[in-house]
Image 1 (tube, rainbow, N blue to C red):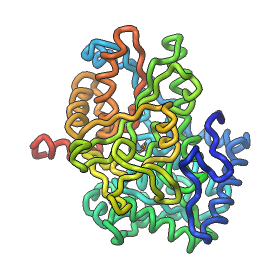
Image 2 (image 1 turned 90 degrees about the horizontal axis):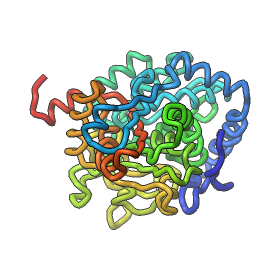
Image 3 (image 1 turned 135 degrees about the vertical axis):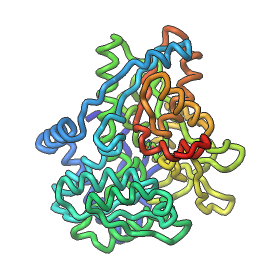
Length: 399
Ligand SMILES: *Cc1c(COP(=O)(O)O)cnc(C)c1O
């Protein structure tokens, strides 16, 4: 794997990242770092990963020229990297598969995970079922109420759901509970984190596992167009699909990398999930990064039409890439995402998840800026089947 943005000994990307964990967790994260460092260059592990990615996940995912959308915007040629075609409908399984294979390698028999909207919980429960491992998913009590279909899916897959009532009963509280459980059950338990955040080595490990997206996209676009794209665009919740697409392009300085955060009801309203555009540095879930917080440093609840973008932090590598100016971070509102969702469905026959619909909103402007000779690769990181009820609600339609 490529290694041009390696965190230092403390797991820091510049001023961000690190491992801010209690004493009791330190041996666990150090062991995990050791095991991951060895596994990722072990031909046996790599072959195992490649096999499951091919036969179970369905990789490589296609790259697709979105011709009618390109014509509609009247500018650059737009390509979708189609990670929505993966098993379970999004990029999350790339990461879950890698971490669960690592858990097996470590002889662990119990998998734990946190989930907000339930997408990471479903992907983890899926892979745990496949490998016959016990799976426990921590989920905020409020989210359990809001995400019933995914709760039922996880139960069908054999997972146990633990409701979390501390704090605001949402994702950040579920993540705290999962970290606590991990300390208590360290002997048999592996904690699968769902985005490129958490204490080192998680941000680096999740990035490495999701980089399959960018490696494939780079090769595919070179083959189809004979050159690199002018820009790569991806939506950002915690930042795993974005860093997965961007990482293999980091050294290609001529390629603009653009992350799109959720601006919710508008950045000025305070009801959004844009940690970089509207937050400031602090420490949460074992790492230092940009966070949504009030004046007293209390973590604020994020808001977005898309449950998957609704995390009050962002992976530390993005904070670093933001501060050094290598990646541009923009945002899109709920309304813009909803419009892009409908446009993509009508023009391409692809129902996008609401998360990548945010990315598409900025692709529209970018296509015009770049003009006819421009080339854009956007990560279509999830499909929208999960969102049709929510979208109906927002459009005032009863199903
Ligand atoms: C979970 C999710 C996201 C947000 O997570 P990242 O770590 O930022 O990628 C984005 N899109 C989809 C489809 C998701 O399921």
